Figure 1 (cartoon, rainbow, N blue to C red):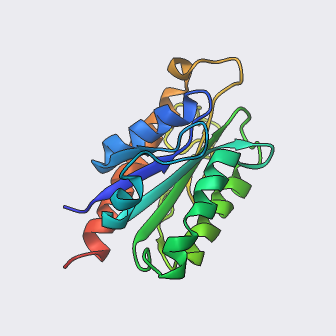
Figure 2: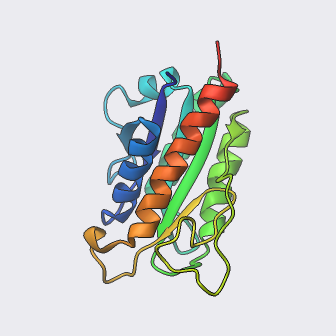
Figure 3: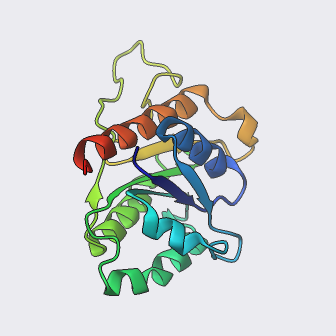
Length: 185
């Protein structure tokens, strides 16, 4: 079984809930970036041992949180030695509006993965786009390059759209399947 680590920052708990659903789908481990932008003790070693790293950040002001950016900048030691080269990578984000410039945050994670020489895993599914589509459909927000979820700014993490949480679990399974397929020893 592949080792999948979901490394994420969550400011208000919504991105944490998404990360937990991705981890459930992927049978992966969670690695939290704290409020100061730091990993816990042993975090860098956990990422070094991973076969796949899933990056997660809320979208604030059209990009990832500063805490996530601090983590990304701190990964320059791994970048210098190509320590993450050929690991799988994927990403997710959450914001308060249906668009909210989520794509910019996903592209930040994608660019980070490419700087590291990683192999990116997208959603691998279509978005429902017919008149009968509802917010509870899988991939209703319409991400292709990565997982996008939406939480109204006045909603608690427990009030997140069930379809978004279900999509996060499916996305986690997608990353696990890609890891099993492409990282065979």
